[in-house]
Length: 444
Image (cartoon, rainbow, N blue to C red; front, top):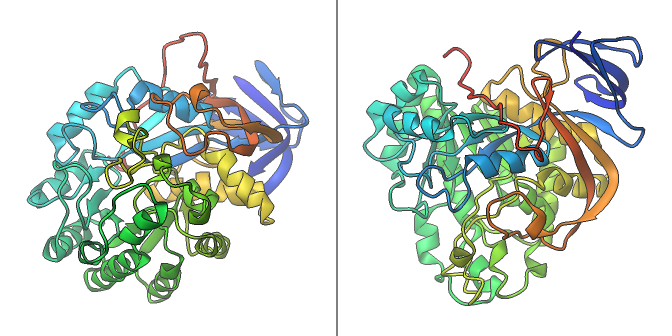
């Protein structure tokens, strides 16, 4: 074997165990008892370290090309690796052009070539007028199609109205494509008080949870009628959990995600003017946060992904603290794992649970059968994690392009000490050429 990692603790599909993991040609070829394997190189993990599968983050806004001053493939993928994420799937908007046809997908791939420190796949977009582009994008290897039901925040990625949403679902159902939905209802938000000023309570009132609940109910109803596969993005409203549970019981093919910031922060503790916490849908109250945690434990929410959505500091309006003017998005790619682990262990969850939410289920949801698991036949992607080591987040030390972070000064548990991609340790310090690869939907 090329490589053997000996781990006193490792999280495998069979649970946490002591084991040796053998690697040949970038793939896992054996998982045996600790000390049972040897190879050309043997790496011994420390007693305070746990071997995890590399995390899979299916909700990342890289913003490249076109808005690479917001992030970029080089900085995003290095931040991912520093946070134990070895696979990410890039969202179709905020880049210019947005990924709404095969030509724009080719532009994005060219922009990323030679610059990715982890493996990267791409989502396509479903926007008004591009129904004829959905199947070609699917055949070109995108993992599914994102849509909005209200203004996306950028004019070049328009929302679908109800007729457009149904049309997209029927088209995708014809070839079993996946629709991923930013589910907030435009009419409900238009009827709410407009976001303005420094008070977080006013911003929260401008994006009521009924906007989520109404939109999710509409998506589920259309999925029942069309048979399309749907995925609810960044669930923030705990009130929608029963809707999802009932739809799944009825046979609707629906999955859902939430994000570390919804599991970490609460509205009651967000200071007025702290626009680094602005995201859409918004961070809600403490009781709502606990409903999300329970839904994760119950399996109604499938996975946790970051919705890493950075911007330049000026767009956050840190000077005025005006929530109405600030860009909505939280940069959390590098700290997602410790943020979730900190909250999970406080509620009695284990690393097995965290790996299920942040590696196994995201990989399974997009059909990446070789990712997210420490198992024979999978890619040798790993995160070496010290779960009991504490640290305080310093936004200036994160590898994101811009030093804006809602997690700044927050104490977290768990440090990623190394990440491995297909059997090679990712070197973030010496300037070694990155060796991430492009991923496509299996079968393309």
